[in-house]
Length: 121
Image (tube, rainbow, N blue to C red; front, side, top):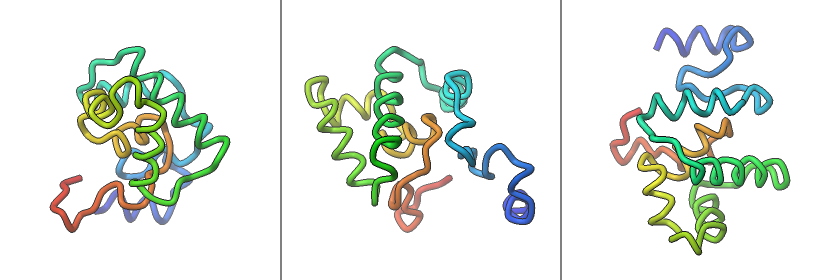
């Protein structure tokens, strides 16, 4: 909790928030993505990059989505031929919205982590 208080009082001193989400989209790089993926125990492949680059491109063109369900539907449509939701969850077992957005350096859409369901962060 102390880190959150420090972040709130001086957020400019931090590259990311206490949960590891980047403050600015421009701070993201492929090296940061690889470091975050390793930290989450993912074995990185070209397919992971496809999802990340799609998410970042979509965000730049359309801005943030309104909620996690909408983002998942967008991802499912884009990766339908690869297997849709099943394919995405195989790549990102922590959730294709939460985990992929975090690694892509994007803000999490509303409803990505619902603590009322017992999610531990």
